[in-house]
Image: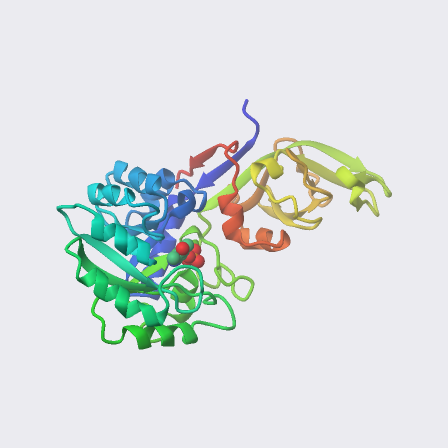
Length: 366
Ligand SMILES: *Cc1c(COP(=O)(O)O)cnc(C)c1O
């Protein structure tokens, strides 16, 4: 028997979450953002649930090839564009749309020989200060692209730094609007947080929204709002089983470093999940889990292959009992991945992407 741990991918949840993006931005088209192997879910496994998207956005050319191999004929956008000139050949061959964020990428296009002109998304740095042309250089870049026979359509794009937080997006929207007012072309501004929180504000939801984390069922602005508030469903469930139990007397400690000491008699279960599976080692005692669908909590330090959970209130639980580390229990209850990420001092994005290769992943049946 394989080690009793498994991640399940819920196609129904992916489809539901995508529908939420459409509902939040009804006039926009929706990119399903599937970079980082669909945020750890696996592009091939996520594809079934997300194929209703208008396009897929990612940044790895090999991942774009995998999407085409699935027979996806619709739009694919490379969010960071090309990394070197010969990437343009793959863009021509696979009909990939690509971001242009720096002058070198325009030089490469100008030198590229293609029969089929490209659709590009010209990216503005409106305040994130990561990728993109500054507002005062944007028009010049646009004019250069517009003059190239290699370029067919130019869309305009920017990315928000604070769509999930109190600073918001108004300052960046103002910068973007001012610099693009009289430029033609479709727009793409909103990530998940902007789609859920700001889509009603003028211009924000035009014309393509980029739904990443919300597609996978995490609330982009947790803990201000949780997945339930946004009606999102978890697309990944990490489940393992109890291998053994221990009964602790007052004063007994648990695990490496003896970080937990029992104050009273208690019963714990040792679970087949550790940090080598992608469960964060930083989760302290008290991090929530579901045991047979009911809430309990971790006890002591997370080891490489195991962790301990409190079974004191669960005399029925023992070896073989199901422990859901995040997502949906088979009994139906949900433990939001955002709660686990918060306990670990990180965000759900990181947990999803860090699911370890040794964990078997399967599509849930319904
Ligand atoms: C990753 C990414 C997104 C998706 O962000 P979420 O917060 O996951 O919705 C959108 N746009 C760009 C440019 C990205 O890199």
